[in-house]
Length: 378
Image (cartoon, rainbow, N blue to C red; front, side):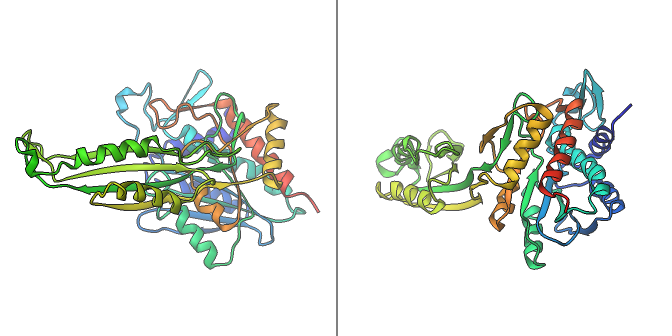
C-alpha cells in the first residue's frame, strides 16, 4: 500500500513546477494545511508564488521551509522515465524534484498531519514557508516573505529547511550553516590595436594575467572549526572581437568567493581591489552579495534535530556547512536558528533524479519527532 508521504510526493512531482512556476503545488499543500487549521497567506510577487501558513500565535515559532520549484529536466529522452511522471522502481521514486525537494515537503506535510491533531496542549506555533523562487533568481521568494514577516511582527525562532543534506545514508549529514557567496564582475580596460603592432596597443589580457594569478594563489583565510577556508574561483572570461588580428580593448572576468565567518565581504572586496590597483590597472568591479555566511550553534533546534535523527536512523549526523547557498541565508539574519535536513543529494539536478521510497517515511517520522521535542506538552 502506498504511504501518504509517497502519495503526496508523487502528486507534487507530476506538477511540472520548473522555476519560477509553482504549477499548483502550493494550492495542493495549502488545502491540506487548511484542513489542519492553518491560516494561509498567499504572497505572490512578480510571477513567483509564495505561501506562509501558520498555526497558532504563541512563541516559540517553529518553521518548516522549502521550495516547490525545480530545475529544468534536461533532455527528456535521456531519462529512464518521464521526469514529470513519478515512477517507482527498485525501491526508488524517480522524477524531477524527488530529492530536491518535493520529497522533503511531502514528509513535512504528513508529519504535521500526524502531529497537529495531538498538539492541543503543546506550547508554541508552527508554520510553513514555501516558495517557487529558490532554484531561480531567489529575489521574490523567501527573501520577500521574510520582509513580510518583519513588517507584520512575526519572528521565527527555529527553522528546518528540507534541503537534501544527506550524503550516503539518510541523516548522515546535517547542515547547520552555509558559506557566504560574493560575486564580482571585473572589467579591465586596455587599448585596442593591430596584433602586428603591439607597441601601439595595450593588451588587457596580458595586463591582467599576473594579477589574476596572484588572486588565485592568495590564501584568504584559514577557515574555522565549522567552515573550510574561503575559496576564490573564476567562472567566466570574455575578451576579443572575434578577429585573429585584433588586440582587444577590454577583458571581463566573472569570479566568486565562497567565504566563511573568518573574513568579511568588505575585507574580500578591499583585498581584490588593492591587488589590482597595486599594478596600476584601469579597472572597475560590479559586486553582488548572494548571501552572508550563517552558523547555528548547539542549542534547542540543533540538539533536537540530532536526537530525532539518532532515534530513527541510529546514526550520529556529521555537522556540515558545505554545499552551495540555500534560503537559510534569508532566514538566519532575522535571528532564527536554522538547520537543513533532507534526503540523499547524490542525484539532485541530474538525469533520473530519485529518492529512496523508504527514506520518505523515515524522514517524515524524524520531522514529527522534532516537533514533539521542540514543542513539548504543557
